[in-house]
Length: 277
Image 1 (tube, rainbow, N blue to C red):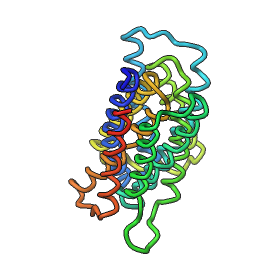
Image 2: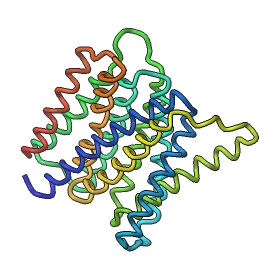
Image 3: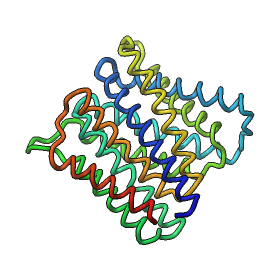
Image 4: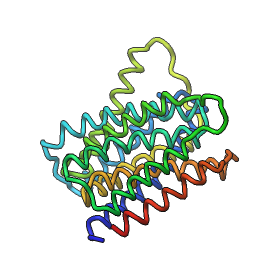
C-alpha cells in the first residue's frame, strides 16, 4: 500500500476514534441541555483551540481556503445540530450510524468523480464499509426509531463538510474558520430567538468531551484528506459511529443486536481491504 494511502487510513481511523468519543459526549450533553447550546460551546472550544495552535505554529492563512472553510463550517454546523438532536431523541447506537453512512456516500461519489475510481480492493473496502455502517444503523423491532430524520440531515451536512474541507490547502486556519462560522451561525440563531431565555448549560464534562472530540476529529480528517484520496479519508473517518456504539453499549447498556454486530464486522473487513489496496 502506498505511504499516502496508509497515512490517509491511519489519520482517518484517529478521526473516527475522536469523533466517536466526541459524539458520545455531545449526545449525553444534549440530554441535559438544548442541543443548540451544546453546538455553540463545542464550536467555541474548537475555534479557540485551532486559533491558538495556528498562532503558536505560525501557519500562514491562505486566501483561497476562505470560501471552502466558511461553507464547510456552515455545512458541518447543520450536521452537528442534526446529529445532537438525533442523539438526544433516539438511541445513540442508531442515530450515529445513519449519519455516518449518509455522510460517507457523498464524498465517495465525489472522490470517484474528481480522482477517478479507486483500485479493486479499496473499492470493495469502501463498499463493505458503507454496508457495515448501514447494518449497524438498522432499527431493531418494527417501531420507527426516534430521531431518524435528524440523523439523515446530519449525514447530508457532514458529507458537505467532507467535500468542502477536502479542497483547502491549510490545516489549522481552515479548521478555526470553520468552527468560527459554526459558532456565529448558532449564536445568531439564538439571538434571533431572543427574548426566549437560553437554557442553562448542564453536563459540562460531557460538553468538554464533545468539544475536544469534535476538534480532534476535524483535525485528523483534514490530515487524512490531505494525505490521500477523499473517499478513503471520508469512509474511514465515517467509522466514528462504531466507537459511539461501543461507548453506548459499555457505559449505557444499549443493546447490540445481531445486525449491529454484523455491521461492526463489515467495518473491520472494510479497513482490511482498504489497507491491502
